[in-house]
Image 1 (tube, rainbow, N blue to C red):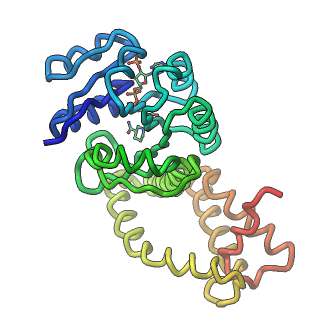
Image 2: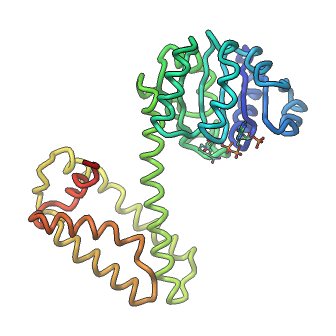
Image 3: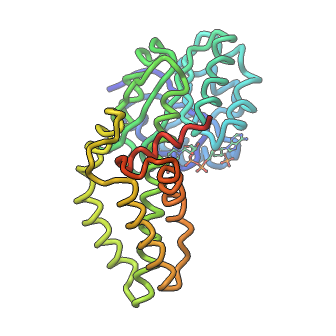
Length: 288
Ligand code: FVH
């Protein structure tokens, strides 16, 4: 069984389940939550409730921060900077990469070992196979907190730049978001024929499953940087994209989710790159 006291700040859906996993693993846990009533079930289950953030951070050498946002993290941590000196702070709150770097710089100024975490899991997945968490920042902090963090899922240290875990989080969420938007577009189109959303979702699941192995090939084209495999050109893809947009509108469905892709393809074509492989779009994504 694990030993030691872990402090958890924030008992929302995520902080609560993480606290449960720690208790199950044998850790003593001290919890603090802005709305104190949320500590009650945890106290009944064996955690200790702290009345203040200062009291909470004084009880453990590893402090997990699982709050809603960056502003809340600073609101709660800055007043206890002295108490945190020499401790390991693992911030699992979702932030942008630059917010993570700001918190890391603040922590370094105050002698706090800081690790920024990004949770690629929903609360029900925590501690289950398939749960993945990225960490970046202090490698020493990761070495100390690693055994604790492994209770939540596959714990991957991804670099000393505290912003990298968050960047990976935002990149993967962006891919997920575009995929889910794709489902909505398909459902909206098929609903015009009376198809139930669940039936379209099944078809989309099978189709995307068949397409997933192609992601690596697209990535290899991008890494190659020449966009000359001749597989699927910008102009070929423009025609397909235009058909999807027209088909949507013919069914009385807006094409707002599809239009940005065509806009980028048109931009490439207009600059004489119609014969390039369509992943050349990536070159337009960098803001100059
Ligand atoms: N839930 C999920 O599926 C996702 C999975 C990926 C990662 N996210 C991020 O995890 C952070 C915590 O999320 P959560 O699910 O626990 O969120 P809530 O259930 O809404 O709980 C929020 C807690 O934050 C406390 N809080 C908010 N603002 C403040 C503040 N200014 N000072 C102190 N505490 C604050 C809130 O307290 P209360 O409302 O109970 O008093 C909750 O404890 C989050 O970054 C997700 O993006 C979860």
